Image 1 (spheres, rainbow, N blue to C red):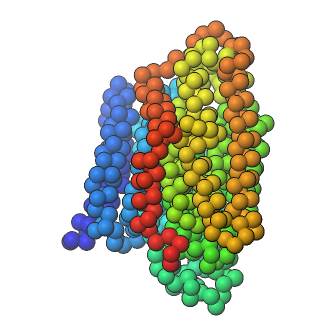
Image 2 (cartoon, rainbow, N blue to C red):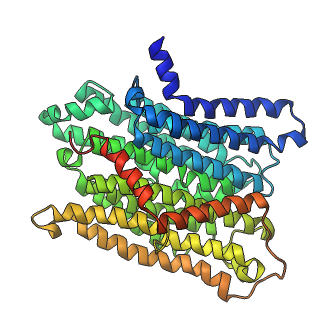
Length: 495
């Protein structure tokens, strides 16, 4: 009985999200059209309750709640769950304001969104590969449905089918890798694998192959090259709130697992896979940024930009130190606010002009100067320029690689410094395509004379994202301290 109560207490944020989703789904069946308009507000209340439980109830009790079957609870997981809940809340705000979407079966859409958020929270807390697989499949199935939610939209259907097919192949490969790991180590527990990995030296090549196959599933979730091809089509075809959500939340959840896989279960110095990850990081950031240059659709541009950012974040994993892990946490927080803030501006513009083409953003500063200025702020942060949160995230992640290089006898013989140089050059490239959009807004004449309006709720969501982007950029110490404290309690790269 005591163990059951402890498990329920540990899962209280997830249960709050799940029960909210069930209540929303049931309410949709009995409410009138006027009543259904309040369902998003109910979702926001449920997410706020889960955030409060996660931060003020679970966080102080992590030491006593940490030992649960299949689960891993620590300030590290609380940090990522906070990011997922905030991302889900901002997505609900975008949904409320997306023209042509909020009236289509609101209970179904919102409940699917909440179920997805709960699945990501379970994924973050997973301490067993079986739990990782079940959580990823649960998230994946819901994501396929959300991308193709508008049934008569051919682009949405195409994006959902591509998403599903690539996801199915990636899952099959990942499960095969998990089976090999179980055969080698006799366990599927991530914590136990960290203790046993040294004993698998009798067949190190098979261990590398198994970890590589496991990485395929995580690479798909993170949209790492060459497992990225689903993301641009899914983001362009799916509803804009869904595009914003899948560009942020699944990546936060996947990164939490990736840090524990390569930090605790299979440290890179033991399995000697830093070179492979370095190649993937370099290919991901370079491909994402180069492919973003010719894009004419804002959502596709942000999709390839998202791929580039994952390449930057992987540097923190490769650096294999506490600064890198903490930098990833800060980067995730920054990315949630700056990317969802940019999508909020896209929603405001697309509601008025009915287009997401970059050329149609011409003269936006004359039609709605605040929206144009806010979008420029988010683009500055995505580009990693000070004084924004994006700059702090890149500073920490790149700094972790420099710190790792300095610990070596010959820093230039390692991939760390070369990765940082490549990342800085890619950041310069990203400034070009971000500011191509800014050029359209401020230096091209508007195609229409009518203004671009946004509701109070949309302004509130965008304002919160903008304030967080600036506050983290100007006063980063609280977030950095919280991230570093969360990482220090783990056993990363020490096993």
